[in-house]
Length: 594
Image (cartoon, rainbow, N blue to C red; front, side, top):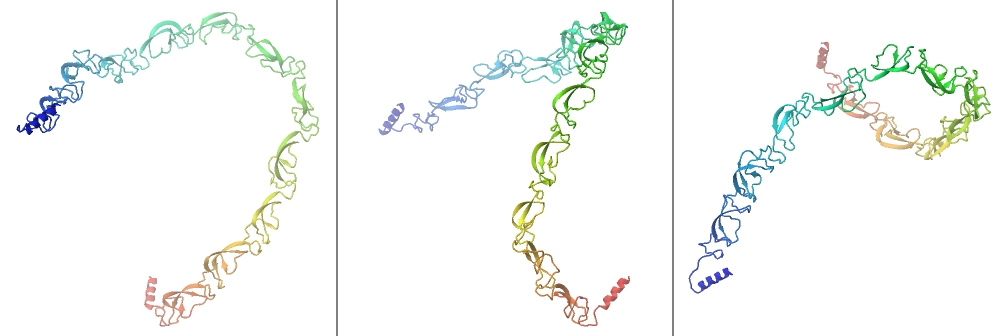
């Protein structure tokens, strides 16, 4: 509203001839001569201030502000913000002591610090020295002790150390002191004991004290009572043992015992560790032993009986601790062995029927057997069931698979077996038919069949009118049965062939004329029987039998052409009297003479 009234007043002055008013380019109502920035309507008043980028009310040195408006903010008139980017800090305070972790312990040297409304991270007065100002749980230095044996317990005071979290002590040092054995990694502390085993025999005496140890007391020391030792200086002497007088020297004494502290190898003459001698005057017997069997009739065989008898190391002859039933009649010396046998009526060595108990000697009783499996009790040739897996009913030695059992003797009878004989029988009812063969119909009787194969059961051979092969290329013509390939032909019948493109013919034993599978010579003209060979010839102008170069390949028969020669070294083919070069011949003769 104020700005509208100003513009109205200016308009009236200009329109009423009141003269030219002051200039105001940005229209903010402030004349240019008093506007510090007449191009920006939000800035018009000249001031002296400083930028406050972090909004803490304190200006930043080096960032002055000269022109502001009614809405301009963040330009305090005082500079000196020591932390322009941190609104929580703006003033520098000297003589403070660092306490970054807030544990009350401080650095030892005062510093000038940039702080805010509080002195967070600093103290005005020094606190206890802080060896790690980044760890509130640690401030004071700790002592370390030399740990030469690495057992975690030191002995000699050596250095101080700041025990920050995650920081181990230096190698060779420990935080715990009091190592009672600095050179032994297995011992470091004194432990109390109440019992001692000095001789290491496992028996102890009551004794209180302390000993340098590790996690546990060393061997020979304990806080738990064990068996009492009657002599802890001698491992052979542990407990007091009873001794008996042994006048017969059998190791067993008689009478009341005497207690002595002695080792296993120690004893007084005439004494023993065992009492209870049942025969004090007999050195071969000293203890009662129980028996479960005895020999009443003296035949050397025992029968069950229980009791005790005064013995030595073992029961005397005729007694046993095992239950033995060797004598079926302990009142008869002639009978001693009990047999469980079966009647063998046919005498084949195998019995049958129910078992019978017979008291006899060491020999099997006559007419009995230890087996009861005779499948034919009245037939001595058969006594056991034998299994078979193959059958030959027609007796041709070819079998079929068939399983079963039958009563037999030493072996299965003919016609039965446990494995194939000559082979698998295709017809076990016919001795002349036993093997399957593959056959092809031979309709033209040339010995080679054709068409689909048929399986025939025979004596092993393919019968007529069949064939073992099915490759007949013409089943209706007995003169032709196989395909033969021809690569050569003799069209002129001179006995020499020329190559032809390969052809296949359905034929008999041989290819038809004029075809051959292999070359016969190399016919140079298979249309002319008079010519059949290629040969090099030389023109013989003087008819002296020797021609001259050049030579020419010619197709010939058995004879040479007139006016031609097989030889081509005539030095003058126009003179029949000259055939060789005399100078060359002489030169050759001289060379040969050398």
